[in-house]
Image (cartoon, rainbow, N blue to C red):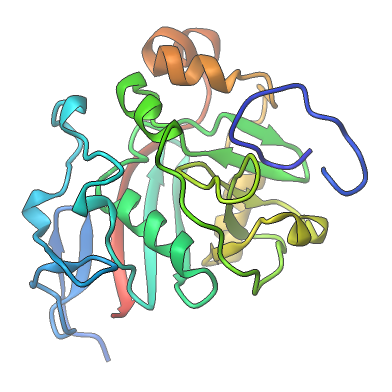
Amino acid sequence: SPPEKSFMQMRKVAITAGFASMCLVGAILLTSGSPGAMEALQTTDGQSVTTTSLFKTGEPSTDFPKPTALAMKLQSPKEWKAHINTNVGPFTVLVHRDWAPKGADRFYSLVMNDFYDGGRFFRYADNFVVQWGLKGEPHIDEMYENGANIKDDAPKKSNSAGRITFATSGPDTRSTQVFVNLADNTFLDDQGFTPFGELATAEDLDLFKNKINAEYGEKADQNRIISEGNSLYLKKAFPHMSYIKTEKVEVITP
């Protein structure tokens, strides 16, 4: 079944299933010789946002920016890497803004605000997808399940193995949940699932196939994740579920 945001019993039918030295500023890793390395970030409508105003892990969850905040409207670089460290090892997502601009902008805003830190890989559908993107903090997840959706991008790339795509529950419903294709899921292409990036190496795909814990399959209830979070639900019911520890951005092409 396709990667959906809302948890439900889903029908299984055929069509649904060179650089200068680096500098680290909060969640962002930029080349000091690149334009914008130490400058304010830009929103999609041209406003400036300082890196110091972004949310950082360890701050109260009540301080996480609302979907309407400037910090959540950042414009993605043309090409960049999301370096994500998990409890079973690191992986890197290479994001291409021209594949899906709105999706790339949202993913960039989420990573820059440490949204995925602590998030669990709550759905493992063998030879299909691995899905994540609920933070596990009810205050934040409830806020982003309502009123945070972005418009769809026109499809440009196929859901081949290793590519990353936002989950949806219908047209124009992408928010925070994403999935990695474990196989060539081309049947998703005409259902509104538009890849915005890809795993950087074969080793990254191997981590999803062989290191991310698959023992819980698709048992986790997304509604309970949203309402109870990691502490009250996932850590107790699925104690060995793999999770994200840290995330940072490396800009390739501003």
